Every structure is written in structure tokens, then in C-alpha cells.
Image 1 (cartoon, helix red, strand yellow):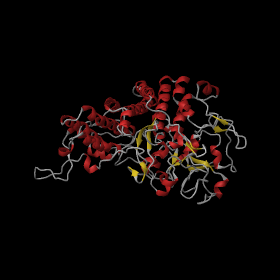
Image 2 (image 1 turned 90 degrees about the horizontal axis):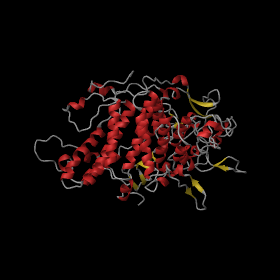
Image 3 (image 1 turned 45 degrees about the horizontal axis):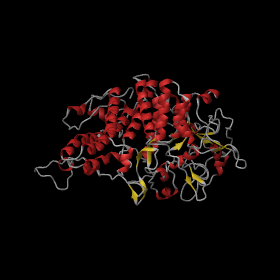
Image 4 (image 1 turned 120 degrees about the vertical axis):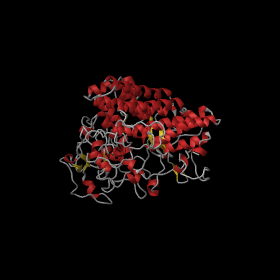
Length: 578
């Protein structure tokens, strides 16, 4: 079997207490604290619940990429986050202590299993998972709301801690770091999880990589929002990333799909989001949401490719403009770039560009749906003129069920974290550190044809060096951020990057543009584009005018605490201006 899947314990079996009863005997059909916490396997099955909460590929999760404005959706809550029109929340699934309660319960019940004969080492594997996931749950609230009430033990409705006030931002973040450090202490190594045939479970190195992520978030946010101890947290981010790098447990995935005659069918970067990139043989995936292989061998499924259609998540020109040309220069500086004209073609967008554009966005000839390969954008499916290609699979499109796993934390992110944290600590980065990080990512890309089909001339993406940046009037910080944006495109990072860099107040006010409106769009097969499609002064599809977008820097860098929570607990104070 290609992988061993994590079995999911149903919610009714996990942590439920007994219902009120007039007799002292337990109902035979009820699973509860008094007849559950007995063996290490009980603990393992309880810990399996946490894996159902990992970010997945549901429609709601995929559409979070709309928040940044680098993808577009015309209506809905995602669009409201993007254009600044969201109201104060009454309730929110993002403000949630249910899973924190489950983590607290496992941590508290674990010692009783040791008392019943289990070894402390075995028990600690799953206690470490509980600490990791508790940190993750708090971090997801922390990103949105700032400081929140800290609950680190199970409570009843009569406990006074139920009505705790919000902890400070610093206190909340320190709790996240403490939980991650505890998880790193207790968890197994990646090799141990794989040898135990438990691929997909959180390892020591995975927790360390996640620590690098959270420390980079807060360190850069502190630096650019001017509070806290930025250097302390940037140092933690850099050092944690370097520990992952030095562990040699992970590396970049470099395996393309090769045809019968040796021809290169799909590149390694594309395969990261296909079945070809799944399983423990892929050393790039550090944390993964497992789905499966097919209907007969799966945990669950998703409809991600269908979600990316129907104008749900459509990339904008605002994002596409970040791709470098083959000479390593942005389109504003590269002699390889030509402004499109009405008689240009959509596929010309991909010519002499960073290959990741071709593996992230659909172009003519790509495998697409059951009936045909991609030709031109369809205004119903891809109203911006661009469609997300990650996870695209013709068979799964036809089934309306995809089983491709979701990489949640990749080794490429660790390398990008190391580069960014190193630069932000010193406002400089050496070529040696660039070679340890960003240039490794570029080295795994295929060569680019900068000639013609008749006279090809294949070249590598150039290295990022200080000399290159200085010679071409670039800014190193911009190039490090650009690399992150295109490498991690449509993986849920862009909005939070704008938040921590304090650039949302600039980027999110810009008009949202689609592709250049080529004449060939009017003759595209299928549903037709209209000659009256709104365009800007340069003939780019106008998705949303700048005057319809707003971002209040005194308000929108934090989300509103749901008013229902404040009603329940008046000690909780609302975030500014909400």
C-alpha cells in the first residue's frame, strides 16, 4: 500500500461525558471518560481527532486566498475581507475553544494511562501532539484577534476561568511558543513516525518548522507595526528554520513525471499538488492533510478543482505581475517582457517566465476537464482570465471528488522563512545564506526556453545574489518577498503576509484587475466573453475599481471579536474601531 492512513475516531466516540442519569451504572452504548482512557491505543485514537482539524481543501478554506486580493471573488464573506466591507462579526467559527478543550482533555487524561501500565514514552507521543495542536489552535485565533483568553485546562461551566479576560498579545504568543517547545520535547522524530507506519503524524521536526512559521509571523509583525521584541522572535524563526535544515530529514521534491520515451510530462513543482508527490518518499512535505488515493483507499475527499471554477477563486493580474522573467528580472525591468496588445495571445503570458507560473495557472494545452484540455479562459469559470492549476486532475474533475493530499507546511517554506528572518534581522543577507535557501528553490525549476520553438535556447532561472540585486536596481527585501509569494501561491499565505508586513493598507486598496482583454477571448469556445466586459485604461479586465475598496489601518489589521462572545463574557474587550 502506498501509505498507511490515519483512522479517524468519530466525534461521538472521542471525548464525550455521560449524560445525566438517575442510576449509578454507565449505559453500555456510551463512550465516556470512565470507560475510555485505559490504553495507549485509546490515547492514539483520541489524538486522531486533531488531524481532522488540519486545514484542508474545502471551498471555505480554498477561498481564503481571496482575502489578499491576489485572487478574486465578486461576492461573499471572502470578498468582504478583501475589499474592506465586512461587518462586525456576531459569531465566528474562527473564535473557537472546542478543539482547545479536546487538547486539554488529552493532556490531563494521559497520566492515568501510565498508571495503568503504559510506558511514559509511548504516552508522550500523543501528549506531544496535543500540545502541538493546542498551539496551532491558539495561533489561528492569535493571527486574527490578537490576545485571547488563555484556557489551558478543562473547565466546567462553574469554573471562574470560563470568564477570563483576554490575555495580552505577548502572553498569548508566549503560550503558543511554550506549547510548541513542549511538543518538540515529547514528539517522535520523522523517521520514527514513518518506521511505525504512521506517515502523516506530527514529528519533532514538524513542530520545529511550525515554530519557525509562527515566530516569523510575530517577529515581522512586531518589526513593521512597531511593538514588542522583533529581534527576539526573528532570531527564534531563523534558528528554528536552520535546525530543520540541519536535521537533513527533509528536502525539496525534485521528481518530475517522465513519459515512456523519457520525455518530461510534469515538473516536480506541479507534482507537489498531485498524487505523484504524495507519501513519505516526498521529503518536502512536513505537515500534510491526508485525503487518500481513490474512492477505495481514502480518508475523505474534496472538490478543490471545482471550487477553483465558477469564479470562486480566480487569480488576478495583481498577482500574476509578480512572476519574474527568465532573466530573473521583474516585468518592469526585463528586456524579455513585452506589453500585451489586443492581438497578443493568452499563452504569451507564460513565455520566458518563471516556470512556476505554468504550474500554478492554466495555459493552453494543460489537462483540464473530462472533455477537453485547456484552451482559453471561460468567463464563467475564470472571470479574471486566469485559473488556478494546482490540484487539477481530469479524472477527479469528472468524479467531482479529489483525493490529492494538501501540503500544509513544506520544506520550501522553511527555506523561505530562513531567508526572510535572516534578512529582517540584519537588513542584509549573504550570498551564502541565499544559496542555502532561495537559490535551492530556484535550482529545482526546469530550464526555460528564451529562444523560439524553431531555435530553442534553454536557460536556468538565475540565482538571487547581492550583486544581481545591486546591478539591476532591485531591493533584496522585495525579491525575498516575491519568491515567497510565487512559491507558496494559493496555499493560504498571501493575506497574512500583507498583514504582518503592514503593506495591506497599500496593496489592498488597489483596483483588482484581471488579464489583458485579448481579442481572441471573443472567439473562445464555450461560454462567450462580452465585448462590453469592463476594462481599465490599459485594456485589463476591471474586476473591482479601487474606489470600491477600503482598508483602515487602525482597524483592519485585526478582526472583530464576535459580539456573541462579548455578550457571554463582558470581560472580553472588542478590538479597536470594531
